[in-house]
Image (cartoon, rainbow, N blue to C red; front, side, top):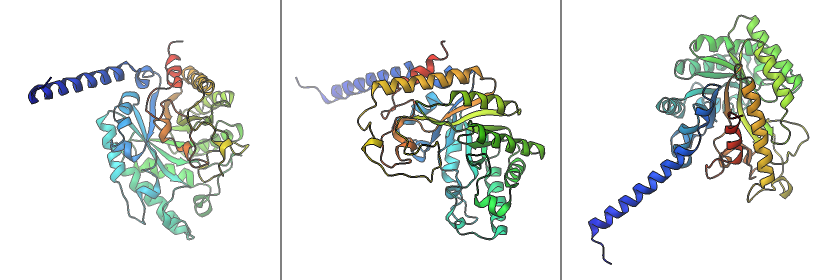
Length: 372
Protein backbone atom coordinates (compact mmCIF):
# COMPACT_ATOMS: atom_id res chain seq x y z
CA UNK A 1 0.00 0.00 0.00
CA UNK A 2 1.31 3.45 -0.92
CA UNK A 3 1.50 6.03 1.84
CA UNK A 4 1.30 9.70 1.02
CA UNK A 5 4.39 11.64 2.22
CA UNK A 6 2.53 13.74 4.81
CA UNK A 7 0.85 10.65 6.25
CA UNK A 8 4.19 8.86 6.33
CA UNK A 9 5.73 11.70 8.35
CA UNK A 10 2.80 11.62 10.76
CA UNK A 11 3.23 7.89 11.34
CA UNK A 12 6.98 8.27 11.97
CA UNK A 13 6.37 11.14 14.38
CA UNK A 14 3.72 9.14 16.24
CA UNK A 15 6.07 6.14 16.47
CA UNK A 16 8.90 8.30 17.83
CA UNK A 17 6.51 9.87 20.31
CA UNK A 18 5.40 6.47 21.58
CA UNK A 19 9.04 5.32 21.81
CA UNK A 20 10.03 8.41 23.80
CA UNK A 21 7.01 8.02 26.05
CA UNK A 22 7.98 4.42 26.76
CA UNK A 23 11.57 5.43 27.40
CA UNK A 24 10.44 8.23 29.73
CA UNK A 25 8.10 5.86 31.53
CA UNK A 26 10.92 3.36 32.09
CA UNK A 27 13.13 6.08 33.52
CA UNK A 28 10.31 7.32 35.74
CA UNK A 29 9.71 3.81 37.07
CA UNK A 30 13.33 3.39 38.15
CA UNK A 31 13.74 4.34 41.81
CA UNK A 32 15.91 7.39 42.49
CA UNK A 33 18.77 7.08 44.95
CA UNK A 34 18.65 10.76 45.83
CA UNK A 35 14.92 10.54 46.57
CA UNK A 36 15.12 7.31 48.54
CA UNK A 37 17.86 8.68 50.81
CA UNK A 38 16.81 12.35 50.78
CA UNK A 39 16.25 12.41 54.54
CA UNK A 40 19.51 10.59 55.29
CA UNK A 41 22.45 11.95 53.29
CA UNK A 42 23.40 13.35 49.90
CA UNK A 43 24.00 10.82 47.13
CA UNK A 44 26.87 11.81 44.86
CA UNK A 45 28.85 10.64 41.85
CA UNK A 46 32.14 11.56 40.21
CA UNK A 47 31.88 13.06 36.72
CA UNK A 48 34.37 13.17 33.86
CA UNK A 49 34.57 15.90 31.22
CA UNK A 50 32.26 14.15 28.74
CA UNK A 51 29.59 13.83 31.40
CA UNK A 52 29.99 17.41 32.64
CA UNK A 53 29.55 18.67 29.07
CA UNK A 54 26.57 16.29 28.60
CA UNK A 55 28.24 14.51 25.68
CA UNK A 56 27.85 11.07 27.28
CA UNK A 57 24.33 10.12 26.23
CA UNK A 58 24.06 7.41 28.89
CA UNK A 59 24.37 9.90 31.73
CA UNK A 60 22.38 12.89 30.44
CA UNK A 61 19.18 11.71 32.13
CA UNK A 62 20.62 9.22 34.60
CA UNK A 63 22.83 11.57 36.64
CA UNK A 64 20.20 14.26 37.41
CA UNK A 65 17.68 11.52 38.12
CA UNK A 66 19.83 9.62 40.61
CA UNK A 67 22.25 12.07 42.25
CA UNK A 68 22.11 15.38 44.10
CA UNK A 69 25.87 15.88 44.55
CA UNK A 70 28.75 15.74 42.10
CA UNK A 71 32.54 15.60 42.42
CA UNK A 72 34.85 16.29 39.48
CA UNK A 73 36.90 13.20 38.74
CA UNK A 74 39.87 15.20 37.41
CA UNK A 75 39.09 18.71 36.17
CA UNK A 76 39.77 20.51 39.45
CA UNK A 77 43.04 18.70 40.16
CA UNK A 78 46.14 20.89 39.99
CA UNK A 79 47.63 19.51 36.76
CA UNK A 80 44.47 20.44 34.85
CA UNK A 81 43.32 23.61 36.56
CA UNK A 82 46.84 25.13 36.73
CA UNK A 83 48.86 23.46 33.95
CA UNK A 84 51.52 26.18 33.91
CA UNK A 85 53.00 28.50 36.52
CA UNK A 86 50.28 31.04 37.30
CA UNK A 87 48.44 29.80 34.19
CA UNK A 88 44.94 28.74 35.23
CA UNK A 89 42.44 26.90 33.06
CA UNK A 90 38.97 27.12 34.61
CA UNK A 91 36.92 26.20 31.53
CA UNK A 92 35.61 22.74 32.44
CA UNK A 93 35.55 23.47 36.18
CA UNK A 94 33.26 26.43 35.42
CA UNK A 95 31.15 24.15 33.24
CA UNK A 96 30.80 21.76 36.18
CA UNK A 97 29.55 24.57 38.42
CA UNK A 98 27.02 25.56 35.73
CA UNK A 99 25.96 21.93 35.26
CA UNK A 100 25.34 21.50 38.98
CA UNK A 101 23.36 24.74 39.19
CA UNK A 102 21.24 23.67 36.22
CA UNK A 103 20.36 20.37 37.88
CA UNK A 104 20.15 21.62 41.50
CA UNK A 105 23.17 19.61 42.66
CA UNK A 106 25.87 20.38 45.20
CA UNK A 107 29.50 20.37 44.08
CA UNK A 108 32.23 18.82 46.19
CA UNK A 109 35.36 20.33 44.63
CA UNK A 110 38.32 17.95 44.43
CA UNK A 111 41.11 18.72 45.30
CA UNK A 112 43.36 21.64 46.31
CA UNK A 113 46.48 19.91 47.69
CA UNK A 114 47.47 16.40 46.60
CA UNK A 115 50.86 14.83 46.00
CA UNK A 116 49.67 13.27 42.73
CA UNK A 117 48.60 14.83 39.40
CA UNK A 118 50.66 17.94 40.07
CA UNK A 119 51.53 20.38 37.28
CA UNK A 120 54.64 19.35 35.29
CA UNK A 121 56.58 22.41 36.47
CA UNK A 122 56.58 21.03 40.03
CA UNK A 123 58.34 17.74 39.21
CA UNK A 124 61.84 19.14 39.62
CA UNK A 125 61.10 22.05 41.94
CA UNK A 126 63.76 22.21 44.66
CA UNK A 127 63.33 25.70 46.03
CA UNK A 128 61.19 25.81 49.17
CA UNK A 129 60.16 29.40 48.54
CA UNK A 130 58.85 28.47 45.09
CA UNK A 131 56.85 25.57 46.52
CA UNK A 132 55.44 27.89 49.18
CA UNK A 133 54.49 30.48 46.56
CA UNK A 134 52.75 27.83 44.45
CA UNK A 135 50.99 26.42 47.53
CA UNK A 136 49.64 29.76 48.67
CA UNK A 137 48.69 31.09 45.25
CA UNK A 138 47.04 27.87 44.09
CA UNK A 139 44.83 27.50 47.16
CA UNK A 140 43.91 31.18 47.31
CA UNK A 141 43.20 31.59 43.59
CA UNK A 142 41.19 28.41 43.08
CA UNK A 143 39.29 28.33 46.37
CA UNK A 144 38.30 32.01 46.19
CA UNK A 145 37.05 31.67 42.61
CA UNK A 146 34.51 29.04 43.61
CA UNK A 147 33.53 30.28 47.07
CA UNK A 148 29.75 30.29 47.23
CA UNK A 149 29.59 28.33 43.96
CA UNK A 150 30.72 24.97 45.31
CA UNK A 151 29.41 23.40 48.48
CA UNK A 152 32.70 21.96 49.71
CA UNK A 153 36.39 21.39 49.00
CA UNK A 154 38.62 18.40 49.59
CA UNK A 155 41.33 20.75 50.83
CA UNK A 156 44.00 18.08 51.33
CA UNK A 157 43.88 14.62 49.77
CA UNK A 158 45.77 11.46 50.78
CA UNK A 159 48.44 12.99 53.01
CA UNK A 160 48.93 9.92 55.22
CA UNK A 161 50.91 6.70 54.99
CA UNK A 162 49.31 3.40 55.98
CA UNK A 163 50.86 3.62 59.47
CA UNK A 164 49.28 7.04 60.04
CA UNK A 165 52.46 9.09 59.57
CA UNK A 166 52.66 11.93 57.06
CA UNK A 167 53.40 10.96 53.47
CA UNK A 168 56.82 12.17 52.30
CA UNK A 169 55.37 14.45 49.63
CA UNK A 170 56.95 17.54 48.12
CA UNK A 171 54.76 19.60 50.48
CA UNK A 172 56.09 17.85 53.59
CA UNK A 173 59.67 18.05 52.32
CA UNK A 174 59.61 21.75 51.46
CA UNK A 175 56.98 23.22 53.80
CA UNK A 176 57.23 21.06 56.92
CA UNK A 177 54.70 19.07 58.89
CA UNK A 178 52.39 22.04 59.49
CA UNK A 179 51.57 22.40 55.78
CA UNK A 180 48.17 20.73 56.21
CA UNK A 181 47.10 23.15 58.93
CA UNK A 182 48.27 25.99 56.70
CA UNK A 183 46.34 24.61 53.72
CA UNK A 184 43.12 24.67 55.75
CA UNK A 185 43.95 28.13 57.07
CA UNK A 186 44.39 29.48 53.55
CA UNK A 187 41.25 27.72 52.31
CA UNK A 188 39.23 29.09 55.24
CA UNK A 189 40.29 32.61 54.38
CA UNK A 190 39.76 32.21 50.60
CA UNK A 191 36.46 30.33 50.84
CA UNK A 192 34.60 31.34 54.00
CA UNK A 193 31.27 30.09 52.62
CA UNK A 194 32.56 26.63 51.64
CA UNK A 195 32.81 23.43 53.69
CA UNK A 196 36.39 22.21 54.15
CA UNK A 197 37.25 18.49 54.22
CA UNK A 198 40.17 16.10 54.55
CA UNK A 199 39.92 13.09 52.21
CA UNK A 200 41.87 9.79 52.21
CA UNK A 201 41.68 6.04 51.57
CA UNK A 202 42.07 3.29 54.20
CA UNK A 203 41.45 5.72 57.08
CA UNK A 204 38.94 3.22 58.39
CA UNK A 205 41.97 1.02 59.24
CA UNK A 206 43.06 1.48 62.89
CA UNK A 207 46.61 2.80 62.39
CA UNK A 208 45.78 5.16 59.56
CA UNK A 209 42.58 6.22 61.33
CA UNK A 210 44.64 7.20 64.37
CA UNK A 211 46.83 9.32 62.12
CA UNK A 212 43.79 11.02 60.60
CA UNK A 213 42.32 11.71 64.04
CA UNK A 214 45.61 13.25 65.20
CA UNK A 215 45.72 15.37 62.05
CA UNK A 216 42.15 16.63 62.52
CA UNK A 217 42.78 17.42 66.18
CA UNK A 218 45.90 19.37 65.22
CA UNK A 219 43.92 21.49 62.75
CA UNK A 220 41.22 22.12 65.36
CA UNK A 221 43.78 22.95 68.06
CA UNK A 222 45.26 25.61 65.77
CA UNK A 223 41.86 27.31 65.66
CA UNK A 224 41.45 26.47 61.97
CA UNK A 225 38.17 25.23 60.53
CA UNK A 226 37.77 21.67 59.28
CA UNK A 227 34.19 20.61 58.63
CA UNK A 228 34.47 16.96 57.74
CA UNK A 229 36.45 13.89 56.75
CA UNK A 230 36.00 11.75 53.66
CA UNK A 231 36.60 8.00 53.83
CA UNK A 232 37.12 7.00 50.21
CA UNK A 233 35.70 3.47 50.27
CA UNK A 234 37.65 1.69 47.52
CA UNK A 235 36.95 -1.80 48.83
CA UNK A 236 36.77 -5.34 47.46
CA UNK A 237 33.23 -6.71 47.39
CA UNK A 238 34.05 -9.78 49.52
CA UNK A 239 36.33 -8.13 52.10
CA UNK A 240 34.53 -4.93 53.08
CA UNK A 241 35.89 -4.07 56.58
CA UNK A 242 32.50 -3.46 58.19
CA UNK A 243 33.71 -3.38 61.80
CA UNK A 244 36.51 -0.93 61.03
CA UNK A 245 34.13 1.27 59.04
CA UNK A 246 31.67 1.44 61.94
CA UNK A 247 34.42 2.24 64.44
CA UNK A 248 35.68 4.99 62.15
CA UNK A 249 32.27 6.61 61.78
CA UNK A 250 31.97 6.78 65.56
CA UNK A 251 35.54 8.02 66.07
CA UNK A 252 35.41 10.78 63.46
CA UNK A 253 31.90 11.89 64.46
CA UNK A 254 33.14 12.24 68.04
CA UNK A 255 35.46 15.01 66.81
CA UNK A 256 32.39 17.11 65.97
CA UNK A 257 32.82 16.89 62.19
CA UNK A 258 30.86 15.42 59.30
CA UNK A 259 31.69 11.93 58.03
CA UNK A 260 31.43 11.13 54.33
CA UNK A 261 32.08 8.20 52.04
CA UNK A 262 33.56 9.97 49.09
CA UNK A 263 34.82 7.57 46.41
CA UNK A 264 32.77 4.44 46.94
CA UNK A 265 33.19 1.43 44.67
CA UNK A 266 33.28 -2.31 45.39
CA UNK A 267 35.60 -3.94 42.88
CA UNK A 268 35.22 -7.62 41.98
CA UNK A 269 38.59 -8.41 40.41
CA UNK A 270 41.61 -10.08 42.04
CA UNK A 271 44.13 -7.78 43.70
CA UNK A 272 47.72 -8.32 42.46
CA UNK A 273 49.02 -7.43 45.93
CA UNK A 274 48.31 -8.79 49.36
CA UNK A 275 47.94 -5.31 50.84
CA UNK A 276 45.08 -2.85 50.43
CA UNK A 277 45.83 0.36 48.60
CA UNK A 278 44.31 2.96 46.31
CA UNK A 279 47.61 4.63 45.47
CA UNK A 280 47.13 5.70 41.84
CA UNK A 281 50.84 5.45 40.98
CA UNK A 282 50.90 1.70 41.68
CA UNK A 283 50.71 -0.52 38.60
CA UNK A 284 50.95 -4.24 37.86
CA UNK A 285 51.21 -6.62 34.92
CA UNK A 286 48.03 -8.29 33.73
CA UNK A 287 47.14 -11.86 32.85
CA UNK A 288 43.97 -13.91 32.30
CA UNK A 289 43.74 -14.78 36.00
CA UNK A 290 43.65 -11.07 36.83
CA UNK A 291 40.81 -10.40 34.35
CA UNK A 292 38.36 -13.29 34.73
CA UNK A 293 35.04 -11.63 33.79
CA UNK A 294 35.63 -10.18 30.33
CA UNK A 295 32.17 -11.14 29.03
CA UNK A 296 29.90 -10.79 32.03
CA UNK A 297 29.80 -10.90 35.81
CA UNK A 298 28.71 -14.31 37.18
CA UNK A 299 25.38 -14.25 39.00
CA UNK A 300 26.99 -15.52 42.20
CA UNK A 301 29.49 -12.62 42.26
CA UNK A 302 26.77 -10.10 41.40
CA UNK A 303 24.68 -11.41 44.30
CA UNK A 304 27.62 -11.23 46.71
CA UNK A 305 28.40 -7.67 45.59
CA UNK A 306 24.74 -6.72 46.05
CA UNK A 307 24.77 -8.07 49.60
CA UNK A 308 27.96 -6.15 50.39
CA UNK A 309 26.41 -2.91 49.14
CA UNK A 310 23.24 -3.61 51.14
CA UNK A 311 25.25 -4.27 54.31
CA UNK A 312 27.16 -1.02 53.78
CA UNK A 313 24.06 1.09 53.27
CA UNK A 314 22.37 -0.51 56.26
CA UNK A 315 25.36 0.64 58.29
CA UNK A 316 25.23 4.12 56.73
CA UNK A 317 21.55 4.39 57.67
CA UNK A 318 22.34 3.36 61.24
CA UNK A 319 24.63 6.40 61.45
CA UNK A 320 22.74 8.76 59.15
CA UNK A 321 22.94 11.53 61.74
CA UNK A 322 26.73 11.52 61.39
CA UNK A 323 27.06 10.86 57.65
CA UNK A 324 26.37 13.80 55.33
CA UNK A 325 27.19 12.32 51.91
CA UNK A 326 27.83 9.06 50.08
CA UNK A 327 29.53 9.52 46.70
CA UNK A 328 30.22 6.78 44.16
CA UNK A 329 33.48 7.10 42.23
CA UNK A 330 31.91 7.01 38.78
CA UNK A 331 28.45 6.67 37.33
CA UNK A 332 28.59 3.22 35.73
CA UNK A 333 30.90 0.22 35.41
CA UNK A 334 32.19 1.14 31.96
CA UNK A 335 33.69 4.45 33.08
CA UNK A 336 35.15 3.28 36.40
CA UNK A 337 38.83 4.02 37.02
CA UNK A 338 39.16 0.40 38.18
CA UNK A 339 39.04 -0.81 34.58
CA UNK A 340 42.50 0.69 34.18
CA UNK A 341 44.00 0.43 37.69
CA UNK A 342 46.26 -1.16 38.75
CA UNK A 343 46.21 -3.19 35.53
CA UNK A 344 45.19 -1.59 32.27
CA UNK A 345 42.42 -3.01 30.10
CA UNK A 346 40.54 -5.04 32.68
CA UNK A 347 36.76 -5.40 32.88
CA UNK A 348 35.57 -4.45 36.36
CA UNK A 349 32.03 -4.12 37.72
CA UNK A 350 32.31 -1.96 40.86
CA UNK A 351 29.29 0.36 40.68
CA UNK A 352 25.48 0.26 40.81
CA UNK A 353 24.91 0.77 37.06
CA UNK A 354 26.20 -1.50 34.29
CA UNK A 355 27.93 -0.62 31.03
CA UNK A 356 24.56 0.15 29.43
CA UNK A 357 23.76 2.52 32.34
CA UNK A 358 21.07 0.17 33.61
CA UNK A 359 20.53 -0.58 37.32
CA UNK A 360 22.27 -3.71 38.58
CA UNK A 361 21.23 -6.15 41.30
CA UNK A 362 23.38 -4.08 43.66
CA UNK A 363 21.31 -0.97 42.88
CA UNK A 364 18.09 -2.62 43.97
CA UNK A 365 19.74 -4.10 47.07
CA UNK A 366 20.74 -0.57 48.12
CA UNK A 367 17.24 0.76 47.50
CA UNK A 368 15.80 -2.09 49.56
CA UNK A 369 17.73 -1.07 52.67
CA UNK A 370 15.20 1.73 53.18
CA UNK A 371 12.36 -0.77 53.19
CA UNK A 372 13.80 -2.93 55.97
